Image: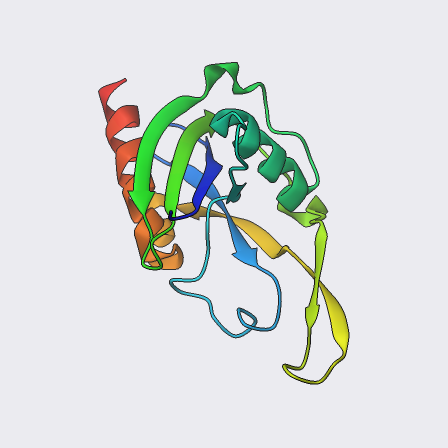
Length: 156
């Protein structure tokens, strides 16, 4: 069964200048990638977990701060990424100081087959992007969330 993740697409600004918060994955495999490598803060849904609660937990782990109250979160549906993972997302208005982002860490063997382990942040940086820039920065499988957010904000 394909893995499922849940995340929050935080946004700020007015209808004329919306920005979304994206994160860049940490670790050596992503270090030199930029366009098409960013993501919404998200993580795997464990069996029996509430997807929105998972999204809030992952936001906290990847950014080092709690998201605003998720009671006002707006469902953006789900998409399937190139590797087959399904991602569920919610839009949430808020603001985060990206200079203060402190991600949790993970350990992996590095370099490969060396027998040594190294520790890396789950997220090495976060930033705010216009909707147009976000469409370039995001993993292609997550771009529909930006389009859905734009449609929701236009209709309100």
